[in-house]
Length: 225
Image (cartoon, rainbow, N blue to C red):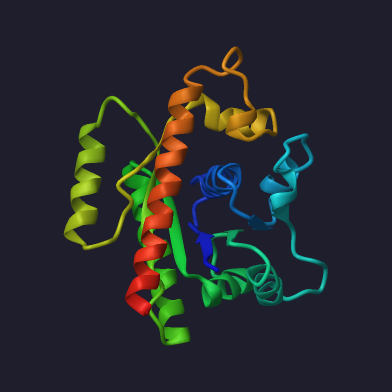
């Protein structure tokens, strides 16, 4: 069963949002999912204190339990294991990378974020050298406009393509609903259209993103077979 890690050294890059959107979308579609909140900020753990029917998908590592043990235990029980880790090259990052089938690198389409994403890829490369294996990865653009592509975003996309860095076709756009996930501690399907503008569009955005993640994972499995 695949292990998906969200990693970026920059705080506020969208790691927790990416994990929550992906995890709750897959769970809403009937998949069995667990999200390990290994980030000291415990953003997802606080979300799980709400009343969402999916709140049990978030787990925090047990005190004294090595993260790899937690990952292996959950991987044997659930179809998808997602991990939200602190971006720096700490013990949790190393543990998560050692088990990753796919690393998502969330970033905004801003020059400053692109510079930090480069550091994230460097961290990933060092882990590849450490474990002597390729770690599949791809950039996920966050908080982009679904209508307008800025000149800065176009340039960043061109630079990423020129550097042959994989990226997802689907971006997670700037959506009120994605903020309301945390404000109301609910999944997208549990939010109210009366309180959340553009909810249907956000739900479709999440479904398309989850579908692309699954497609990438299946392609990798087929290549490894």
